[in-house]
Image (cartoon, rainbow, N blue to C red):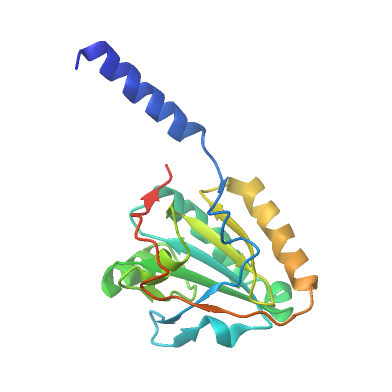
Length: 196
């Protein structure tokens, strides 16, 4: 390939990547029951999504090698430490995908993060939520229905919008919904990427 077309191709790709902020995630899952899962956190606690029915669950899918994840996680730390939000029923889960336990522990320690971090060691939960890349945020209502999926890092404005969505979800009463069970037959196998 000649040098000039190659340069133009990479310049366009870089511009498209740099211009992106947050994007809507897989629309097919919004307004649907969240796939159930059971994971073990870094601290050894068991987390089962269906047992959190009646709570508003905020999930952030992340990896330590993603620069957008690194700058976004402190916002989730703030949400998890917000006494008003937590007192009204918010649960924050920062699900790490496919990274060794010690690497995750070191990353959290270096960045002064104390979030609940379930480990998605085989990527099955990320697949069941059709995570297109990192970071991806999922907001689940008290009724177990996915209210919003967001791909990418939105900065301060994105965090304010997310907080407004959380507060709105906390106002809604829990109503019956059926959690779907993630099975290999229902999972997608797309390889997630990172937003840069």
